[in-house]
Image (spheres, rainbow, N blue to C red):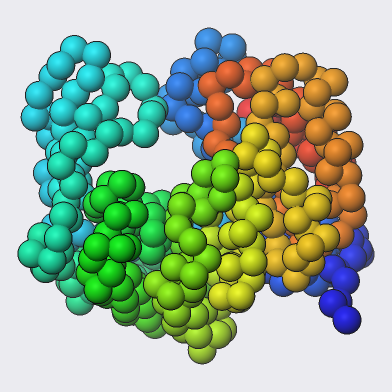
Length: 376
């Protein structure tokens, strides 16, 4: 019989790190974590016109959030990175070389997905050349470990390694472009397998070095491999190319007593949840409502996986009644462990500062946070 999720027991009095770990493991907690994804740059620009402080402002501190997750300062990508430079200014768009070596067309002044004009990897030769920048033993990719350990010693944040844009499908998509990648699963399967296998070994070697110095709580894998209709590759392809590498990462985590391995992917999650469950992932995000995700229903189907997100960001673009209705829709999730409340994406520029403040106030009330934590 599937065990129930843990209870909410205010008598436990946990710190942030303990609370996050126990929530992900679906164990008893004093309350659910209060940690949210931040805003787009355009959102901050809007908020400053509405009273948000100028200058460098700590998003979490301003809204009175928990410490959440804190990332280890290692370079999981290229060393050296390619030079980021503008190749051609076309007025409304620019042609740039990004730090991954791809040539992109971007819209000026907007946070949109760029168009890949020339990918960094188009075949075996370009991949072998790129590997020269993916040496896990490059000392330059690691921080001063004394400073890094001191930073984490002064915080109760849950320690994370891995972030955007590092994942199996996700990183290959950035290296090749989505169309080239999808075709290559058929035309160049040996290349795709080699790329995923190599990157997995590369990252695990970096995790191993970091684990010598710092207690790691969380390995994060970024994918963004789904659309409204589900994953961009078939379940059989996922199981062939990705599941074995996920299991390598999870085996490493178990060997090093790292309790959390998460995956971030947008889009419809119906098939993805089955695949991630089979692989052993225990934290999944962000569950886009407009793509058909219902975290309350998904939680019933996958009670032993912690879900993070799933609150419809579109509700925050309207009024307080819509925000209240969204909380009511997901009310069952606030009475058990195994859920981390959050929007289903970053905070969109259509969301006003006043609406976001109201959302945070109501979220704190739902979590039982009664102490005054004013916005500052």
